[in-house]
Each structure stands twice: as C-alpha cells, then as structure tokens.
Image (cartoon, rainbow, N blue to C red; front, side, top):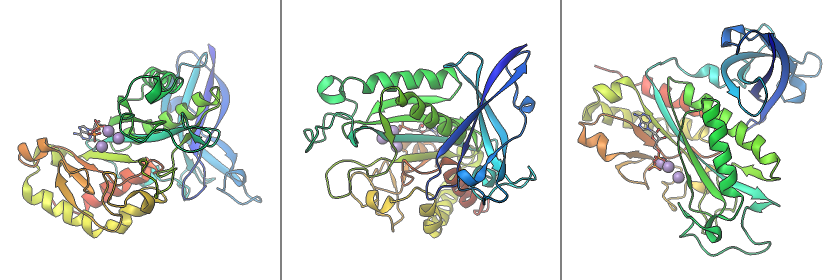
Length: 340
Ligand code: ADP
Ligand code: MN
Ligand code: MN
Ligand code: MN
C-alpha cells in the first residue's frame, strides 16, 4: 500500500468565468487508483460562490483521473460540483449539461498570454516592443525572450506525462502570447484535458512568478495587438462519415439561428475581440467560409474536397471560455438538426 496524494480539482462559482480550485486528500491504495475507487468529497461552497454560509457544503464528484508527475504518488482528480445529495448537478456545473456522445470529437486551440508585473512577458516597462510580425512561430531571444519557451516546454511535458492529449504548441502573433492544441474523442475528454492543462500551466508558472492571462483582449481593442481565442474544432460521426452539402447547410443555418446562445458561452468580453479585424468575424454576424479565417466557422479545404465530410472550426470561442459550456452548446445545436 502507498499513500496517494489525490488533488481534487473543480471549477468555482465565479461568473462570467469560473476559477480553478483544488485541494489534496491522502488515501492508501495498492496501485494507482481508478476513477471508481475515488470517493466523493466535500468543500465549503460559501468560499467559492457556490453556497450560502448557513448550508455551505458542496460535493465533489470525481469524473476524470490523471497521474501527476510533479508529485510522488500524485493524482489529479477532475471533479464535477454536485448539490449536497451528491446526485443533482450544481448550477455552476457546465460539464453535466454536455450531451453524451462517444463519437463527438473536439480539438481546442487554447491561446493565452504569459504576464509579469502586469504586462505581457517581454514587454518593456512602458510603451510597446516592436510591432507584431515576427513573433508568430518565432525563434530567438528578441522574439520570444528567455523563460517563455522554458515554461511552454515544461508545461507540454507535464501534460504529456499525465495523459492530456496535446497535439501541438506554437508561439502566437503577439509578444508573450502562446497556443497549445488539445484533441479528444468523446464529448467531454478534450474539455477535461483543457481544464487540466490550464491548471498545470497556472501551477507551473507560480515558481517563475509569472501569471497566465486568459483574457481575450488583454491589451484592449484599440491597439494593434492580437487577442486570444480558443477555436473549437468539432466533428461527429455523421459529419465525418456521411456529411454532404445539404446536411452541412442545414447545420450552418442552425448555427446562424443560435448566434446569441453560442456567443453567451463563448467567453466574456468577446465584443472586444470579434471585431471583424485580426482574423475574426464581427460578434453579431454569423458566416462560414472555406479556409476563411475571417468567418465565424472556417470550413477546411479537406472538408469540401471529401464531399462535405470531416470537421469544422468555430473560430468564435475565446481564450477565457469554458470548454464544457462550449462543447455543450455546439452539441446542442448539432442535435437540433434532423438527420435523414
Ligand atoms: P489552425 O491554427 O490552422 O486553426 P491547429 O492545427 O492549431 O489549426 O488546430 C486544428 C485542430 O483541429 C487541432 O486541435 C486538431 O486536433 C483538431 N482536429 C483535427 N481533426 C479533427 C476532427 N476530425 N474532429 C475534431 N477536431 C479535429
Ligand atoms: Mn492553431
Ligand atoms: Mn492561434
Ligand atoms: Mn484555428
């Protein structure tokens, strides 16, 4: 038997963006614990905006488990927040609203800024570094500075160690801005992985005295510095295997109809980012286009070439969006389109 450090991770009740919270409990197991061996646990919801002081217990229900290579016998336990009965999802529990679909696949492209002393890593104390251009996928100290790549590489290894399905990383358009991509099969896997990857990044950056700024337009909308998105690439069995132009057009019509419902869960302050500039569509318009980075939904060339089969990219979700709510809304809109 060994004592395992079970780090229960959950989303709190802050709006419009939940924060990650976590705490450790120690339990003995003969080998690395399986999901079904992890007990429910509780926390004080009055400290996380999830309950009133008088009756403050909320329940943590383990839903995904990851080894944590930074700790001896470390385990990361992603949890849903439940009401005291342990069965009813708490109002803040977006994961519980995701339709079950083992054949839904998501790929999220998480962009973010590394920040220090209240400005992007590598920005001078006042003013700006030289304009955007060479930072995107750039190399060299003048483009990426000194510790950013170290953080990004360490984060990548932490994620791979714990089974988060990274697909790639790149330096982004603004100085101090980076991206990672996570892909997952099943309606919840990629979203679970994104939250664990965010958790690992935030925790890793503590020792560098660096913050992660997930805001979608941290430098404001009036300067020529890119914002951060979290493009959501998605496909279902129908999209991948039967597809067709007619189904695709019906699907896009349904997305157009639900524009407000989608924007509502695509992250706060998105009006600052979805302006029609910087490779975005305006927040109040819906459009799709082949290989069009100025559209709401970009249709890859391969999709059309394969007879309207494959995956689509919703470019509107922003870097602060909750991947649970984003996946939930996309699957809901897809479910509203009848299949012949
Ligand atoms: P870009 O920056 O050109 O938009 P990326 O390579 O950063 O492209 O991201 C593309 C994403 O699409 C990846 O996260 C990948 O996992 C995802 N993806 C690829 N195929 C599928 C698919 N069939 N279903 C869902 N997502 C997919
Ligand atoms: Mn990308
Ligand atoms: Mn990008
Ligand atoms: Mn993209």
